[in-house]
Length: 59
Image (tube, rainbow, N blue to C red; front, side):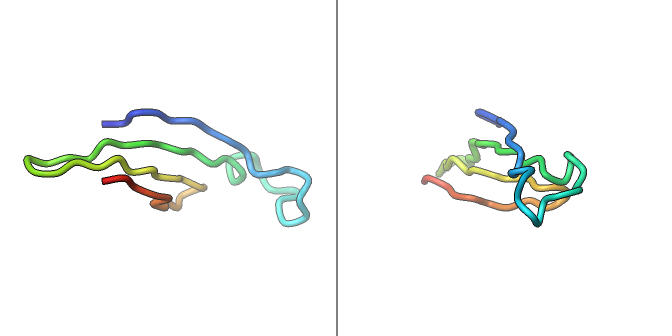
């Protein structure tokens, strides 16, 4: 279950980002409640382009 989600852009003025399409600079953040019958955790996921990362979690 997705709790919250938000988007941000990487800085456009940084040399490594100059000329990149906006979609490549978009960073999506999601907090997800993951649970089974015995445990639960809140996981923060980050999507950049087609890559996904686990940024953190709380048990």
